[in-house]
Length: 74
Image 1: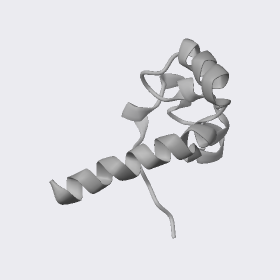
Image 2: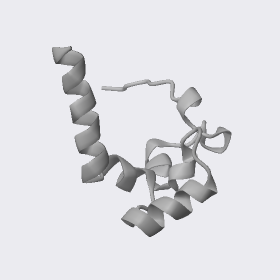
Image 3: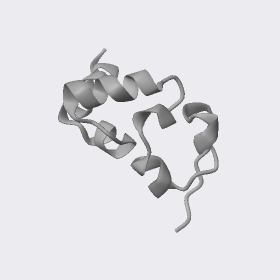
Image 4: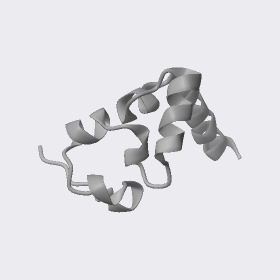
């Protein structure tokens, strides 16, 4: 089953036409609003090098779940 999602507003211009695998392998600055400085800070503080690592990081995942739960209870 093919799925189409428009992510252009969430991605840096350089990654708007990239494949999902390319985006996941890219540095966090591939996400709109993050810069190479953020890449450096995430690497130094949490060892995060890629969008995939950012998305699967336990702290960010937990924060996302807590926000989602707040939306269900509040």
